[in-house]
Image 1: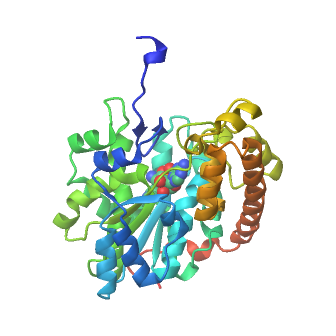
Image 2: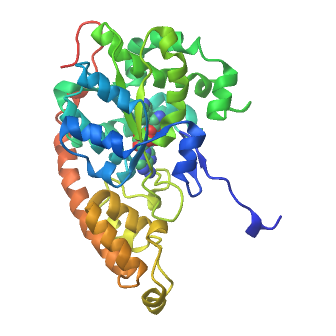
Image 3: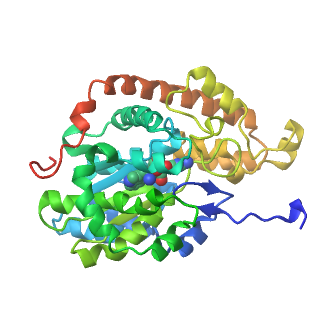
Length: 383
Ligand code: TYM
């Protein structure tokens, strides 16, 4: 087969995302549900608004989000759970689920468990030393705090530091999941190290910790991009057998790589805008970004561009444009009225402002770390 005929099947796992993703197909493949207008209406009836990331379909899929809302209406509060695998500095893609989680925390007054899977990232990258991962853990914690989560309602769990609070639950979970299930769900091979094979039990633990903290089965909602879904599939399978509720999820799409298809990735710094990038670096990365435009200005004017294949358009749509402005931008792009340089300029100026503001919060976060670190569930509840 010639290289031209090679059709790479898009792949989405917790550790890599390749190819251009058809999110509707992913819903079918993963067995999740599309977020419907009826569901958004129910949400609006409770909190009075629909977050822009739902309006533009960035959060597009769920499991049991409707159930979470029903329980909430009946007076049963839920916990939020999300996390980060500290393998590098954070990029704007990571911030998306966290910004949305903050919105949910504010609107539902929900406690949040935030897990830092330093163990996962040590085990996954053959070249990752624990020293390097510990440095990224500290750096990423600053990003989490800079989002503005409430210290009285948010606790950060660092796996290697807090393992004593996780281990007994982890072995209960691990005992109920066979290697053949883990292999089918995560694609583990004979060459996969055995640490990775056991790790999913650790990421499952915070789905059930709220039930221990509250001393009764407690609903949990996980906002994250859809790459994390395999973890929740295996966790949901065993939850009820262990006497807990199945954790609910709300899934986002990916902020794409600036270099074309695939997701923004901190292991390829040129593909991503990092929260620590300087204004010059941001401007440079955006000036080199791939777009959905034509090779020349005259062709762009004549043929128009393709906003849906354009990372610059996606960043503007999901982060900076209002839903209405974004629709206008798409129309102007397709008709050839808008040039890539103009969109890049808009993205650059917005990103520079956003990231420099974020960096100020990141600086302030340095004094707040201890307020956010988890202290165990036996002696206290959150909030
Ligand atoms: P990690 O560090 O790969 O990613 C952190 C969060 O960011 C999401 N994400 C993205 N979202 C939008 N666009 C992107 N380009 C993009 N890249 C990553 C991820 O889905 C995730 O929500 N194993 C996890 C850490 C973890 C976790 C959790 C995540 C532990 N418990 C519970 C979510 C929920 C990890 O390595 O995430």
